[in-house]
Image 1 (cartoon, helix red, strand yellow):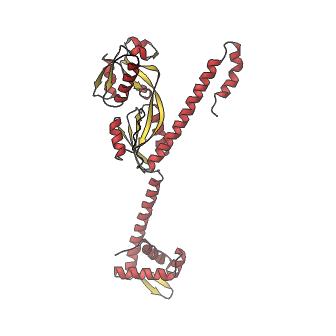
Image 2: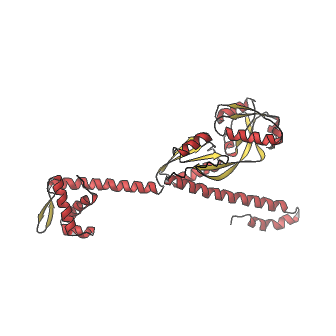
Image 3: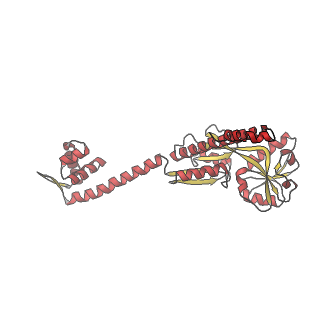
Length: 332
């Protein structure tokens, strides 16, 4: 039996108006269409739904049962359509995000917080892992997007560089370099390093090897199959120093200190499959790009303000020029 939604609408309208003619007028169809389709439905189910009389129609007992179920069925279809439209707009649904940067602070935490505030109906499934695992999951559509360190350029995925983070040296609190506010690569030429084989260990390893080889140094690097928290503890034991990104330094560990590595920054980007049609992903990427543009504008303004201040003469002239420079440093 093939019962169409329009058949149910015709029955409900005829019951509501008590007339095939008035039901047809309310639905904008011919009266003959209403009468014919209801007759076909009665023939299919083997029972009369209406008593016809000169003044209109009345529901039979069978008709009342059909109307009750028809209203429920149409409500279910309507609710399903509303839910799908909401998912199609990206207001509801699920977005699966791969990370290995810290959520303690920084761009990634700010972006995910902004997305959560705006799209509270979307469930965020956040998965930690390394680059290779995340890339495989993105290709298989098991992850919608991965935010990774470095600048990968896989041929079968789309990427967008979104932000950079300063690099910090992690030292035992009693280390000789802990007295400095900032450290340069030359200060690290004789240090023993430890890295994690999890998290962003491969990116840190590549950075160490490249920068120190430029100085003609072949660093001693030990690898540990531990996460970031346990790696920090190993640093506190005096087993070596390591590097970490700026977002992670909001989390403090006993026995270790963070010192900025001069002139070094680590890029981060989003990676996703071009075959992924999840609307919630599009909303997430839109917010990420918007915040990235804002972050870039703030950095440029800070750099411009710093350059202008560096050019100011000392003494009375500084006071004379402070007003215009404050105006130049404001957001447009």
